[in-house]
Amino acid sequence: MAPIAYIYCVYRLASFTSIKSLNILMYSLTDELIRQVTINCAERGLLLLRVRDEIRMTIAAYQTLYESSVAFGMRKALQAEQGKADMEKKVGDCLALTNNTAIVSETRTSNL
Picture 1 (cartoon, rainbow, N blue to C red):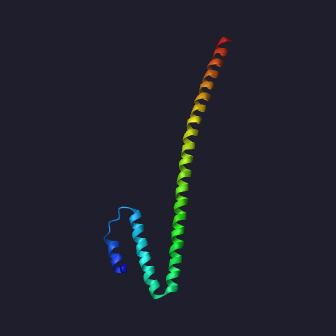
Picture 2: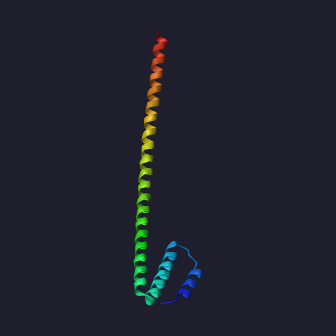
Picture 3: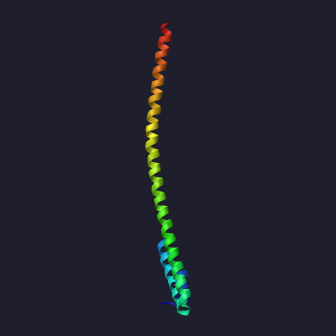
């Protein structure tokens, strides 16, 4: 594996066009750091592995939560659009009914 200085140089020189490439580079940097720490002290390396795995699980949980909340928002937006069309139809029907009632009452009043 490459030393940390080399990975750092690659990190600084790389053009990050996407978050995914940045994540891949950061994961490889983290893995190399853990590997070097494990060589010096096995217990510390194992603890760092546990921390890394916990962080990855937390990030995955947040990503799932984000995706489900976006889907929920889209469903609610669609429901609101459908409800809006139904409500506009009801308002139009009520206005038409009100106009018809006003015309009928005017006609009755003028006949008296």
